[in-house]
View (cartoon, rainbow, N blue to C red):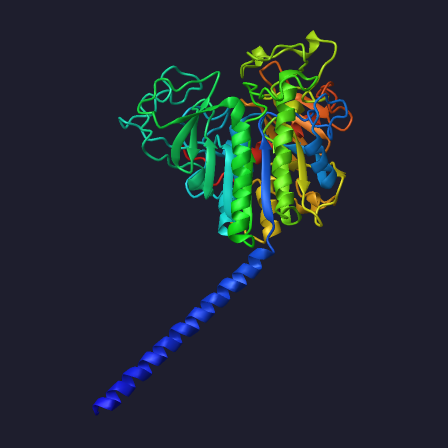
Length: 515
């Protein structure tokens, strides 16, 4: 073969190779364009989860509420309002676990109560979470506020963090290595962006995986921590404004960068949880005391978030879900009751029978946060998706926070693995205003180990001791749970007890691993 022939052969091979890469490039571009076309049809998702907000705080749920909630009431008028939605646990961590995993928290390693300082993730290794599902589906995911589902913190001596397993301790954070990243936290469970704390008593605020700040807290402190000069101190009464600003900035940046890519925003303010850190601007603005002022402030900032969706022209293609993680801590609040020193202890709150009138955060429901009665486990739940969910509509269908992940999976056509979200039901038909709930019963739990179950109109709660048969209520006739009807219907109580036990023993899967 002569020299010219060699060159021609080399050139022909080069052209063939270039053509091959060109075709591959076009095919990949085509796939990306097709993928983009598919993602355009996916709705954005915003979940707003209040902290210790009561069923009776919102005007749309309680006409006698003494707290102005114009923005949440407007949201309710634009969507569907569920009257029979459940947390389903009367405390923070377990309800957030139910929301994030679609599983009852008794399937996790943390059977009762809330996570204490520096305890590890409630999620088992490999367990799918709501943000991970959405991330898998092509969503940009971001969360701001409160996590309280566990994380692993590095220490200077390789031992567990000082005050591990406690809620208050003078040596909090004494051996933390604040120069290193936390692991097994929000970013490791599906959030691409995160700003907020894990557990309030830890005080530490994480930006992604980095500890960058600490919440200035009336109850807790970081005085014993070492090498903390770079840590910013954020006053409690400025935290709501900060996470709202970061949330709206995320929406603005995301819209500018790639409006066609769907996003998931989890807005989890630490409000109206004690200490009641209402800013001076809102103090004294309601007839419900400092607690009511704080709820009103929360409503105002939620309004700013919703206004941002409107201004960026995102509202029409965004599913907005609002709920609380459990019932209110308070039985009654009034403008003449001093709540500035109220702690997270049930003994510190004013009692309803001490006053002839006032604001009742849980409305007519019995009990408060921590209890298995309705005031502890029933939550206001509002869903808005213009053109898909009906406007200004009320639904009495049974619903639980567990159901959010399966319902969103249905909306985005995501196939949930059979061993994940085992207690979650696709409730899209409920949010569409149809009387077609797949959920026939829901397990409820106090902050301790007292369980109950609601099926239809009837609710059973386990006994507290040997001399107690338990409690049975007809919620249709007696939503306030004022008349225990166990003695009238012992067979029904027994049937519900067996139903509860069957749920507790079913589908345990591998979620019971110890940390």
